[in-house]
Length: 401
Image 1 (tube, rainbow, N blue to C red):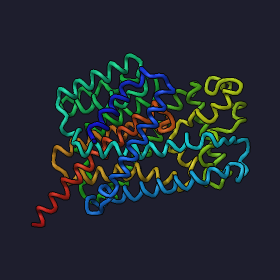
Image 2: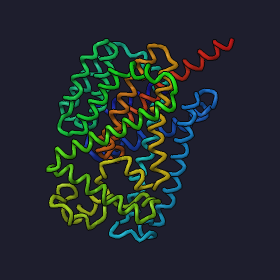
Image 3: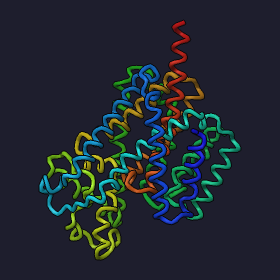
Image 4: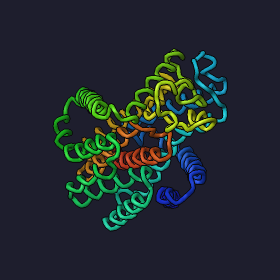
């Protein structure tokens, strides 16, 4: 069953550019339902305490807490939270509640896909020829019109090929996959740095792990802010960059009016009076009635902020901790694994961080073209960590005997 699920998922991804937009979205909803049901069905196996090391168990608990908070907000959203909190100029439409909730369901889909990849051992058993074929298909589909929807697969396959063939020079191709946006250049640099420099970094952080991991994450966050600031300064005349700042400021203001408890699902991404802040509003929303619909469909270009915006401090913090714990879990598995697992952990961590940068500056889980990339990296990383987790626990059992 797992192999069939993976094959139909790959077929869906590679055929995105051939299908009409409405049909693609319908199929994507079916994909989410299939993998979510599969994951729920396998939950008792995935959640067994003894099958996860401490960091993996914490990650699982954070994930469950995130889903519980999301379901609470799903129910609360029918109350019309913007009206309840008197948020000025923020529209609400009950018809968009489930559309916005799909962001949460995509996380469940990623968990299901990751468990499928783990059960089939697909990542570790992939032959060089299969990988080369995957790179060719993904690249051809990308060039023929797949666009942003296939960037994640192209980057992942190229970086995996660089690792499998022991030719890290191939990573120099990655920054040129998509250079139209500065976010991809920043993400590419981080991906290359992690893959190339991970081993010496881990050696330096071998002792006093918690303190040093926290220091590493803090330094990463500071560098990210500085890099983003530099990029924003360079492109301050770009309407796209200015638009992001306007939307983020607008959302934070709306969030503040709710007492930082969140506006829930079904609320517009921005207030209806935002048009007065920018001259190119029609470029994003369209004119007339279609423009008002755009307020609910055009995402805020920052998935992390969107989690705070929809589910307040609790939901936003949980989403941040989930991503941070994924990194901590990776570090722990890396330090206790053999060389083969270390290579795969380094590769999957690099790809995951690449996608984290993208969703920090783009509508990550809110739009299909970005969501498939982030969820795929999440799934691959989960599969690799579960595999490494199993190896570590098996090794501990042997040592006890």
